[in-house]
Image (cartoon, rainbow, N blue to C red; front, top):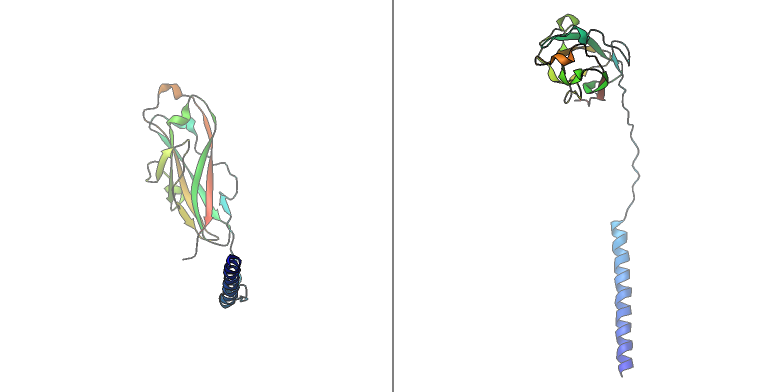
Length: 184
């Protein structure tokens, strides 16, 4: 009798599984479908930043030998967008080269967008920071394709610079970053 009860229970479980599998297969078919979507066209422009007409340029005029404590020297640089879309430009970093007399720890850089090279003068209200590690935040200037902006770079020697930096030298590289600006 126990064998018959076990056989009945096994039969019940098997029938329940078969019914459940049939029901699930039907449900799966109701929720499964395929559709072909025609692809679109994605295109992007290009950006090309030049500084004074070149992708690598020496900016003259930032001569630290002309500085006295509290003094500044300036140089204008023309940033141009030779690409096909708007570009947000910023100074990504300043990389220090050879430095003597610890001069770099007493130098600051200020970057200001100006209307003309003649407007580049000490004391403008741009972003000021220590030269070593300098960068500008966010989008510093937006340049349309085929146009340019003039950047005034001001090198400042701290007014409290010690006499030990006298005769020091510091070479540095200003690294610019340009990002494609989204259409608005």
